Length: 187
Image 1: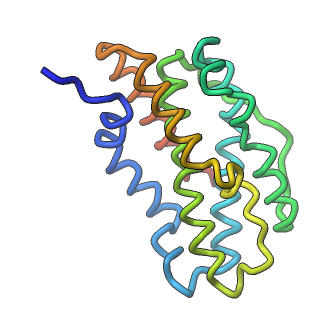
Image 2 (image 1 turned 60 degrees about the vertical axis):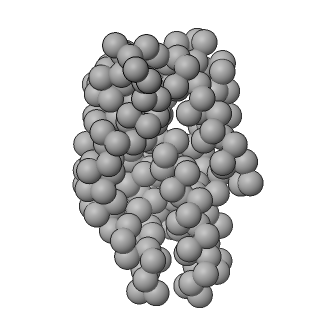
């Protein structure tokens, strides 16, 4: 019997959660000419809060082997979000900490959601760049990997798929579920 890759398992198992987060973050409106810079500011603000709370925790919870294989230092997004927040005239908060603790498996699930936001962000950036109200928006976060976005995602999926056994899939999924439940719920 063939085993489904972990990345495919996560995509399937979290599809409804992904759609719910997109709805909370008003993502459907992005493909309309009525998407405003205020809508975008809220999208960036929600991502900033999430990454500010969890990026360091996720990175420190990964095994050293996974961290090395995905070049975790090259995947930090918080600095890009801070630039976007500043350029959009939004206040950045002092770093906050989360009471959450994560296993390596859960951290990988969280990172699946974080890296997925970057992959989706590439689509968001391309779409919004076509709207006149966004001609002066730099898209630091959503363009953080530039032309390497696809390669970064592929590398991440390869490491994810080769780092965990079938009996660890549900623990990785638990991390992704936690991440989706927290993203977009920051008021």
